[in-house]
Length: 243
Ligand SMILES: Cc1cc2nc3c(=O)[nH]c(=O)nc-3n(C[C@H](O)[C@H](O)[C@H](O)COP(=O)(O)O)c2cc1C
Image (cartoon, rainbow, N blue to C red; front, side):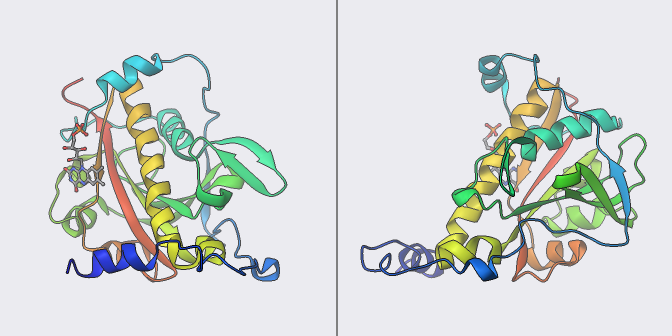
């Protein structure tokens, strides 16, 4: 009656029967991190992990802000925002625990940045390689404009200092959760984006989540196949004209 969405919810639901007799194939566990070889690297700044705006006040003030000043962010500020979304806060074996939770500790979400205006960074597309706390420089150019076009013409993405684009490595989660992985991927992305919202608020920056985009076009901008890895969520960040 409700179409593909309802079917998805139905078919990815757990039942007592569906949970029986499943074992994990440890030999074929997908890699926990995506790494781009032979690209430029940018070391991120050490994050500040104490102080800042009190949590309750930050939550009280949080708002989606869509109008940005034409002012660049510093690399320190960008590093702080990235840390809020995916910063490592604990290590157990080869699992890097982070500021945001993840189903099964599998962390299927990858972070790409469309940098429009960040001091010391060339304009273009970057990817976070978390184990080394560095950005990989994938391509140069003004990608904010095509990204805005791909997001149903939402111009804030071209006016933001930086756009976060989150993808999901589907096999990383499906290895354990099979079709239910698709639910957890979206939940994981939501946690990450809320951390970004709160970090922006506490730094007096504007942030707006973006879920409306042409999937294929965003995947193409990133150079991902849309099946094994697919864009799931975006956010625009910049100095807010209203702060
Ligand atoms: C999953 C999701 C998708 C969203 N997509 C968009 C979007 O594409 N464009 C936009 O301007 N705002 C988007 N938003 C922001 C919402 O419009 C906003 O959160 C809502 O109006 C409530 O306002 P507040 O965030 O200021 O509390 C999205 C928010 C969420 C959680």
